[in-house]
Image (cartoon, rainbow, N blue to C red; front, top):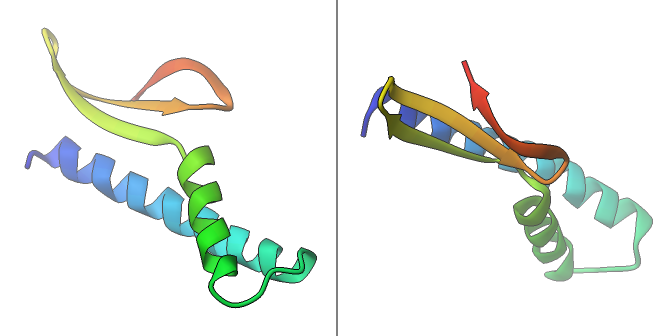
Length: 78
C-alpha cells in the first residue's frame, strides 16, 4: 500500500467511526430501538452518509479524491 492509500483508509475509518458513534448516541436517545438494532442502524446510516476516499494514480502522480453525497462531484484532497 502506498502512503496515499493508507491515508485514504485512515480518513475512511475516522469518518466512519465519528459518524457511527454520533449515530449510535442519536439513535439510542431519540428512537425506541433497543438491543442489537441500535448499532445496526448506526452502522447502516454511517455507511450510507459517510464520505468515500480513494487514492488514484493519474498522469500527474497519485492523488487522493473524496466523494460525498452532501458535496456535488468528486473533490481532490491536497
